[in-house]
Image 1 (cartoon, rainbow, N blue to C red):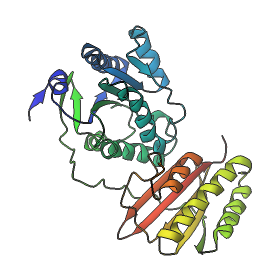
Image 2: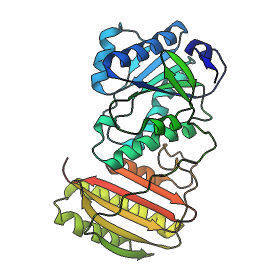
Image 3: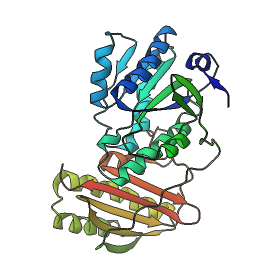
Image 4: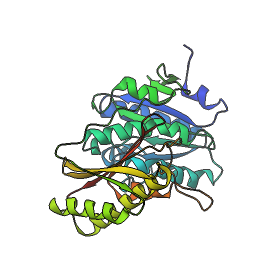
Length: 318
């Protein structure tokens, strides 16, 4: 394997670069990220930093107030893996418009994950970044990852990143395969007891009524129920329109969340649907986009053989 320094790689014309930085402890976090930032500044590159607040505090203590280094507020997306790609598109777009090369530092909010489902979605998001920015203007994203945190298997994380940084040097990731399809981790079985109903054209009001009945039994009402109802209407409508004209709804409560699962025979061939902002010319995808912004978590599994499953998670308490 050929190993190059970060500066050598930075001088090689390339598009999007996605690099994993496993670290242990605050000092290793600072060593790797500060080296990355100073390399960028030496090359007159802008830097966008999107890390948890405790890491922001560490970095600000070591860096002067430099206009080329921008710390972005991740509060609106910290608990929402489905919103992170659109956020990076926005943050990077603000700098590429200035015509400067851009580097980003983005640590996924693993510590904010409150369930195994959220950890799965954060890992999937890391893999989807490679597809989302495959044809974007050139920029370089460093992803610090706490190797002692136990959030996700480190080997699985190397599979999501084309490059890995160790000891201040960048190298190709052994586990990354640009052509491989991401192996979905199977969804957990619904938590007993769950309720089930079949729906078809003309049944959207019955779907909303079923969800409202279950939600109110568990204390979910008001604006959060209205948001869930709107998201559910969009997903059930997609089933009817694109999934063979009918589907199956399951509802249950697990880990202080109400979960609504929709199954149909349709197939989503674009894993980025709903994760990037819709535009005026776009056909479809707005329902999933809304769901990501109305619910606390959205899980999607879709294969030609098994069809599509969409799970909407809504916390029973803020």
